[in-house]
Length: 390
Ligand code: FES
Ligand SMILES: [Fe+2]
Image 1 (cartoon, rainbow, N blue to C red):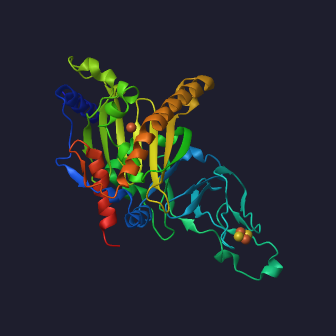
Image 2: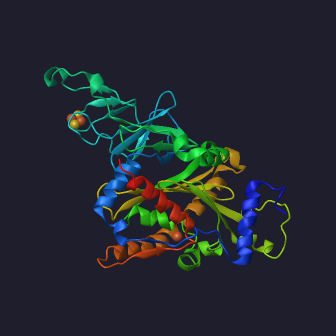
Image 3: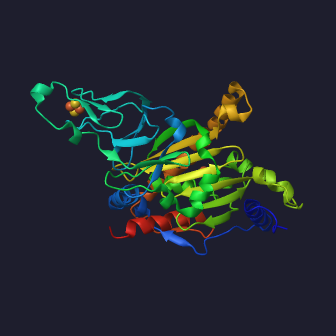
């Protein structure tokens, strides 16, 4: 039946077969972990340096910086950052710190500006990072301005996202990090032609891995989200692909149910599934039938018990949507509101509880089932990065 259909449709049919048989792809073994993974300051320091300080992670969608001189600021685990669109259309990232006496240079979350101007003694910097003005220069003394520009971080735009390595001395090669499989997958999606309808961050008193784990988890849906997500998506059914560093899996939506007893033939079932991509180290990209959601998770710079989640709803531009602007806005605003409600009312309270539980001195070891397959990949790859000797 599946011999002549597209590979994705074949994977969807594999998910459908799992649904029929009440099975799922699995990891092959049960894993165990310790509560201290989420509380230990030494582990958190290794993650900051050996993960975020070494490998690219997504910080924004391309559409969030549409014009030259558009900028956004963020706190990475190791640096305060400014990301800014250049006059030539490229993107640069800098440490958000004045090279005079270290004031936070740009305090706004985002905006557009010709110069970054420090609030302390009003030194100013071009959007390409070069030091433009030293106020009262004749009394300050002679300096070579070329040596005192903003400190640049490696950044790159690829597949509609802005990626960054959180270390000024690191190199960045996103294609190499993604590997040919995931790079090819993302290339097909045309994410650069879409737009981030909304991007918002949430600071939570929860370790970033507890957060990331929850958004790779197809096992909790029916139990934690019985009246919301579970009405639309099947629990614990996954057709999985492990790409070695990143992975993806298809989960059936409930609209597929009519094909449980009936043969769908070679018709497309693309509208009947959600495909989840895990992009190591800290992103979940959900491909819905008509849009994407990107969820990213970042450790707090100091406290292992805190993190920031960012959510982005990435959708076709209004002019490509076949809708007028008002209907387009109404549709995605409604979608966003539903997502927020599930996060704030269902996921976050559960995960805050999880963090406080993990802080128990006698927590004892815990388990990851064979069915929690993407979580295995996440923790396996994290071990690979944090346990290699620098
Ligand atoms: S610290 Fe920025 S101008 Fe002095
Ligand atoms: Fe959830």
